[in-house]
Length: 544
Ligand code: N01
Image (cartoon, rainbow, N blue to C red; front, side, top):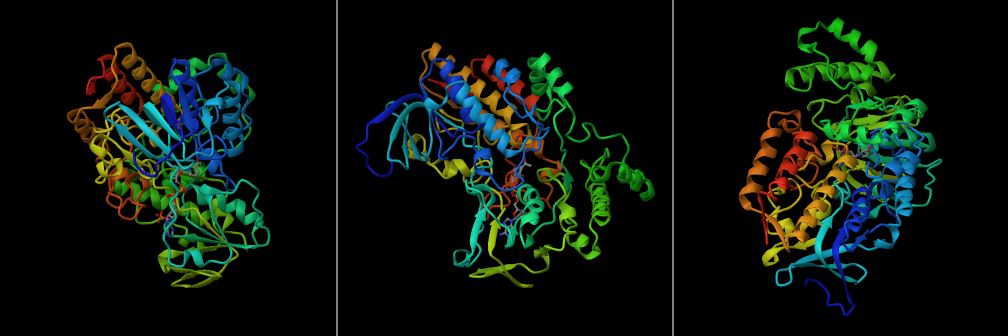
């Protein structure tokens, strides 16, 4: 064991789940139903994970609600009524609380408990887990349902703590309402969170300064109330819909559309004269910049698509100079996670919104009264960090996870995460990561990925129990082969372009190794491989 010695009794479990977002909640349900004793430890005061913490104005999912919901219970699917096509944060949080209550999961979910350390005891083949409450747990299996985007990143800007106004972070937004009325607000960051928050904050603040380091490609989000006929069709056969999701590359069946063009058209932008390209954006708006066969596969074509995108910004933003500031340059469309916005560019037509383009002069310090940039000082009442996350590995590496011989997981992953199927890592027996690095995770519908992983783990635990095994761990050969495969499929895609600096690559975290973390081969191929491994008696894993 590490850390402070505790005299508290140790709680014994078959499975300890860390986190109570989509993955942890389903883990409690599923492992309990398989006959395992289980408890989830959740650091928040409520369940929901992402949808608990990211309470900033405008927070909303960009996957349709019918797609972004559990498929494990037919009754749940028939009963629950979504109101909007793209659910707002509040509605998802309400849904997850309903799931917890409906299946009486709350008695096995312990809130306000942060896991600080987990150590594998080789003598007993059990994980010993410590928490910030001083409690200790011993579990045969440790399932990390800690999320891919859950470790907030706050940049270390000099003077950060000297600010005398209020500091907020989108991913750590307070539970109680925040009133920004009449205040001068500085928002740092223009990723998905900043783009969603900008138009909402602009409605309240006296003035909003958006500090932009990289201009974003923000595509219009789909909005609207859910169609009753669509819901009727869905409820006729939800199982078939879920089957279609698992057969779809990104875990989205396309039911009800609303996710942009499913297939790029055959036409190529490099073979189309500019005047005809303009006709496409006349028709399709910003989405017209991507709607070409070559834009997402060829860098020259991509730049042509980016120019069309910039043309749309010029058409949307009244002031030509501001339009230029907001125009993304120097990295391809599609290399970062797609950003959806509603009235994002339009917000900059308001008198009370200013884009502070940090490409023209970076932030130097935070002062007691605002932000000092190379372009001048901005007086502020509130600073909001919308600066993202230490993605995929951050939440895991912030816990002292020690495997065989006391090796720390973060040391084992110092040059980049190494897993077999994103599920397990050599040296860390009986430790499972739900949607871990090396699995489709953030490149597919998270809820579909989560359910598939929890079910794979459940089947694995049952197999071990039925066959009298106590431990499972990948072989180094199988893990190396999987890591090589993950790298191979990412090669040559926009995601790994030299000009791309995304959180997929860890490029947003100073010092993090530049390694593409998710599996880009698609959900169906992944599921087929994972199922084949299980069917072959967990080929590539050592069972003892
Ligand atoms: O974080 P991000 P996010 N000084 O990392 C900037 C999901 N999500 O929370 O691009 C100045 O994308 C940084 O600048 P740059 C979704 O998967 C989904 O917005 O690195 N700026 C960037 O602009 C998403 O991809 C939804 O140059 C600094 C921003 O901060 C993921 O979460 C909604 C800086 C960070 O953008 C993360 O999104 C919200 C500094 N020192 C989130 N450091 C939906 O479902 C960073 N930045 C719609």
